Length: 306
Image 1 (cartoon, rainbow, N blue to C red):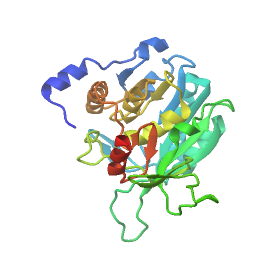
Image 2 (image 1 turned 120 degrees about the vertical axis):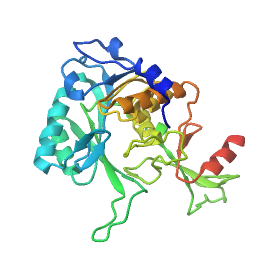
Image 3 (image 1 turned 135 degrees about the horizontal axis):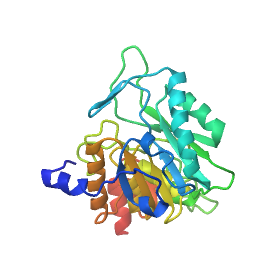
C-alpha cells in the first residue's frame, strides 16, 4: 500500500493532535499524530476497555527518521514502566491489556506488568518470516503478554476459536464424527484458543494490508485480541499504533478506537486503511465468524459456498 500526493494531503487533514485535557468523545475513532509521552496525563480517565501496547522493541532498529538503540534490560524496563504508569488512569476497572514483545525483553515486560496489573498469560506466536542464523537458533517467535486491571474482565472464548484440520478423526460408537465435521474441503474441528499461535501470516507484498512498515503485524492478530477482550462498541486504545492494524481491525469489528503514532507517514497509511475499511470489512484468516489456520483460503471459499 502506498500514498499518492493527493492522498497525503487528504488524509493529513484527518489527523489530530492533543494539546490539552480532552474528553472521551473528542478522541473516539481518531488518529493522533504525536509522541505518546506528550499525551500522557491529557487523556480521559477510565475510557479504555482494551489497551494494546506494541512499543518499540528493544532492538537496534530504524523507523523512517527515528533510530532505536538497544538498551539494557533494566533501562528498557524503566522506560516501559514510565509509559505504562502514565496509561493506567485511562483504563476501566474491567479493562484488559496486551503487550507485544521480542524475546530479549519479554521478562522485563512481565515483571513491570506484574507490579501494576493481574498477569493472566503469555501468548507466543510464530512469525514465519525471518533470516537464518549461523551461530544461534533462528528467531521466529514473539510474545504478547495478557493482563487485566481486576478479576472482572471480558473474555469471549467462543469468538476466538480456531478452525483446524482434523489429523485424528475420532468417531462415536456409531461411526459419526466426534467434535469435528466432514466438509467438501476436508475434515475440520473448531478448537479452543491456546497461548501458542501458529496460524498468523505476517503481511507480505501481495496482501492488501501490506505497507512499508518493517515490523507490521497482521489485522488477524489484532482481531483475536479485540474479539476476545471486548464487546461491540467497546473502546480500543493503541498508543504505538504504527500503520494502524489494531484500529483498522477495531473498525471492522465495530469497536471504537484511538490510535497514537509519532511518525507522519505511518499515520497517513493508517488513515487510508481506515477509509478502505469502510468498503471492505474482510480480515484475512477470519471468515464466517471463525479464525482459520494458515493455508486454508481455498477451503474457506468452499465453506462459504456450501
